[in-house]
Length: 385
Length: 234
Ligand SMILES: [Zn+2]
Figure 1 (cartoon, rainbow over the protein chains, first blue to last red):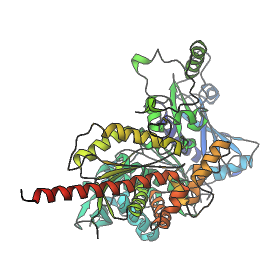
Figure 2 (cartoon, rainbow over the protein chains, first blue to last red):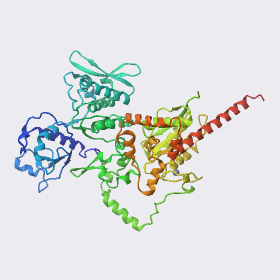
Figure 3 (tube, each protein chain N blue to C red):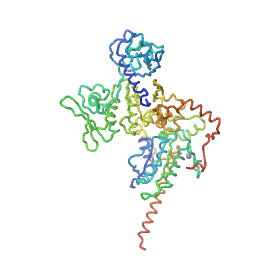
Figure 4 (cartoon, rainbow over the protein chains, first blue to last red):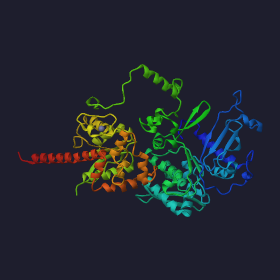
């Protein structure tokens, strides 16, 4: 996901977290007797979801505020979630009492799929949504050796997670170590220092000298990379993984490796893995990262804010994308403003017409002026630079 | 054994750089040593934008003998024999564009580091470097097949399909891309004639490299004559 600051990228991730929380609770109108079953075994199928946020206000434009009676929910905003197979038989609707408070979840059967019967398994999958805002200080911290089941949202138990991976899935750990040492060839091994207080600290070994570098002395980018690798080499990753600022701390040349790590999660078969794909929702402000998706614009979602509404659109839905990319990479075109999804600037706010209007103006002009024929641009010595 | 030739290679990925290096060594018949740090461009038109600065950097700050530039043609106009006419330049052909940038940049540079100018080598892979990797393995993949498709409006394959054929996926990891690229170029390590025949974009690159050998041999011969003349008693 790309877009300017405040365009709704983080809000979408927060909404996913809210969906996960609400899915754990009993529904307002239980669709199925099993709906209140305890969350148990996660389904093996992957999950993908998309959200729409129809603008919904009271007649006088006032937004409902605070916790109000059930009857007033209809006046608040809604977020509708649709799911890909095998969960396409239901739509989950989060009903909100205000722009920021969504406390109710309804499940609406759809003609496709198994209808409400999908809900019990879907809610288990939704419980698996994980969101990460990795923090380099947390990633570098010592963690208790009993905390290694799953990476925490800030990465605080990274050392234990990796140590547990080596213990329980040595093959996956060896692949992780190989990937780390290929991406950062200054290191040749991961090791741990166990303390008497039951904590464990991560260390990397320098390839040249064999010296050990404690996690607290590793660069931020190295720690973020370790956090991403811990997610990507987990043999049983969550069905949906949200990661904020995926490019943070990385040299632009390393972003290809970062993208590869994400692809390992979402296209496991391309890495020779048999597990279900993970839906990765990652935000970035890096044109260099965006460049890496030039061949797959369908994987890029542009967030834009129009007034109070956030609008999300797939880049591949843009009809003139091929022509746009003829002039350069996605990153350059995004920075130039051609793709949209750029910050507003005070001086230009009033002068920028919508894209369609701009096209209309240009076509009017072309009727009035003699445009040179661009069909054959070949030239002789006159064109020689 | 001759000393390695010091050169620069500017390409779009480490995989391309490694494969191109093998092909350059195959044509030159000598080992090459790359300038450090390695040069990289973010695809077209980025490579054309940074090329003048790269040329000046290599000319003044390194002892590289030449620079090899390899880019994908993508959907651009493909270079033909007609473009080779004296004074001809096609503004939408990447070979013509890159050569033009070389010409513009080097013509005003003074001699430096014991050489008049940095030698030029331009290669454009049609439509992408994966076409070169498939040469000799997939007989339907040639530059002519692509240009015929451009003429008829029925393209024989897409760039994504070429990736699939080389890597088994259109989303290869960098490590996998390097592994596959290095495996495929081994076919041309001892003999590049098939690649030159099927891909004129590689053939023109090979001609540039052979021209290097001639120029460097001439320079060495002149230098030897000059030193002999200096050594001769008056
Ligand atoms: Zn040309």
